[in-house]
Every structure is written in structure tokens, then in C-alpha cells.
Length: 218
Image 1 (cartoon, rainbow, N blue to C red):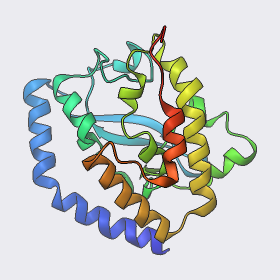
Image 2 (cartoon, one colour; image 1 turned 45 degrees about the horizontal axis):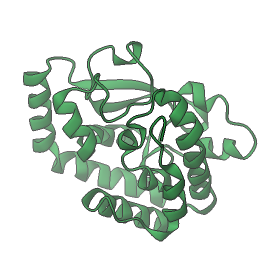
Image 3 (cartoon, rainbow, N blue to C red; image 1 turned 90 degrees about the vertical axis):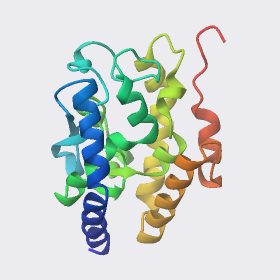
Image 4 (tube, one colour; image 1 turned 90 degrees about the horizontal axis):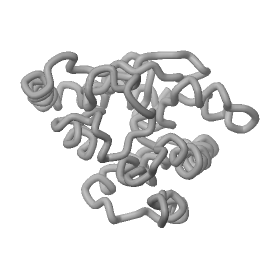
């Protein structure tokens, strides 16, 4: 209950407080890239219930049909404005609405695609008992997934082989220890990682070391 109250109060504050910035981002997308301004992606939420995650559009329209689901930072489908949004995480701001609707939380496993969520069995089912979130331990370790995937000949294969197993480990770590105190620490660490990307908290240091995806032939 405390977590849900925290989410509602601070999502409302965040939505209102960032409204001028969100309007500016929306205007930039509209001027530079045209409509649509928002991206609605089908994801799997708590207890396996599907919902649509909201983001500012950072890729060309119909991008999902034009390439892989994993997105390197040099992916040609990412728009000019989108590159800035993805690096700064400003594309995630509309998810305050998802939080207010109860579909997401500030802290929790990032919402997954059905093709991944349907493979969860055993201990992994514990991940689906939680509301997906804006950030978690995996997000902190994998703060710039696009950079990790740069140079991979097959981004989907690189993601599934090198990144996803680590993310699942960290999501299970959160599932086993989540609390309001843990959530506040994760939120603080996320802010620090965005401001100082080279800084790595000790809790995810070993995971970060194993996340690097080598370039083909390296």
C-alpha cells in the first residue's frame, strides 16, 4: 500500500512538474519528425496482464516491422530527436501516466514483450508478480543498452545471449529483496548513473562487467 501511495503521489507531481518539458519534447518531435508523437508498445505487466507502455516516439513509424527488437545506439531507425531522447531517457516521461493508471511503478522490472514473458517458468514467474517499473537494478546496470549493442551483427542475438540473462538475474534480485528502502536507493542510483554514467554502484558492479557485448571479430 505504501508503495502504491508513493507511486501515485510522485507520479502526479512528476507529470505536472515536467509538463512544460513534455510539451517542448512533443513540439520538437512534431516539427522534426511529424506524427505520431507518442509510441504505444504492447507489454506484459503484473500477473501477465497486457498493457500499452507510453513513450515519446524516438524511432521512425512502423519501426518494429523494419528491423530487430534490440536497438543499438547507431540504429538507422532512431530519429535525430530520438537519439537525444533515448540518451537522456526523456522518452520515458509519458510513463508517469502508466504509473497513475496502476500499470507500472517507479521501481520494478522493466515491462517485457510477450515473446519473452511467455518463457518465464519456475523462479522467473516471481518477476511477473511485481508491477513493471521505470527502473530497477537491471536498468542501473544496463543504463545504455544501445551502446552495449553497438557493433553487434545480430542485435537480437546479442541481447538474448549476453544482456537478457543478466537482466533476469537482477530482476530476480529485486524480486527477492524489494522494499520501500530498496526502491529509494534504486531511484537515487538511477539518477546518479544518468548524471555520471561511468559511476557503478557496488551492488551491480559484477553484473556490469559481464554485460559488455564485444564487437564481431573482437
